[in-house]
Length: 348
Image (tube, rainbow, N blue to C red; front, side, top):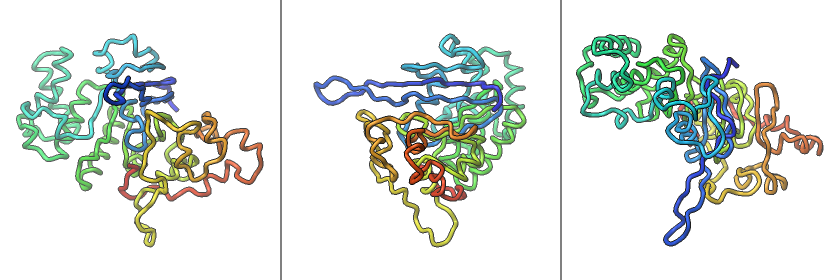
């Protein structure tokens, strides 16, 4: 991996939520000890079910939520010591819904130039020049510069959102479900645009998505998140070819594929997601895990570096389990791996 440009170390985020009338508030651990390293020029995919903490991680990396514990390092500097304006110059988001993320009363040119005006970078002539340049890069004709968002299609609105994020040339772009609200016919255009822009502008992406096919297409590495923790991280090709954690295997099993005879996929995890206010003991995945063992209920697993490119947080890969015998040795976990995601299904 290239030199890290953005790092998160033992990141925690705890919210105090109401437990009911006349009851004290209770802690909800949205993020519970996340470690991430984002190398310059790479794309890291962050996947998991709704409610697992992906967006909360993104908000902390953007400096919009202060971590309850741990630290974020941006370009070798602790983010806690940086001004929010400095953070926003270097990290920009692209949100999932271009219909609500754009001001309906502002023109396209005004929306794209807003970061320049907010940071007081240059004057009106430079703003016009930068807007013209970035509109060309994202494939928007200049004739749309004075249009309002409701005069654009969904794909055009997302191009405006991308242009607004890139107009200040940030180092890192956090893409939170960038194509989920778009028609299937437009999704591939936006994804290919993001890849072209990454190569041309030397961008670094954190890609948050439920759509595993999108992650497989764009990401160089993938981190799988469950109930506030990263349970597996690997190079994209390795993870889709040989997922090791039972939860990752279940996510890949949930993807629709064009293979005849497979029918509608079933993760066999049940519909109920654990209550994050009262998480299960031991390994938080054990109530839904098809390969649960007695140790899973009693003790939380620790991350194990299975190979130089793979990190797994599962008792199946612990040294104690390996020493227990070959009946369920860790290397057998990958035997149940599903085919790589080739459809448009999601992990949600």
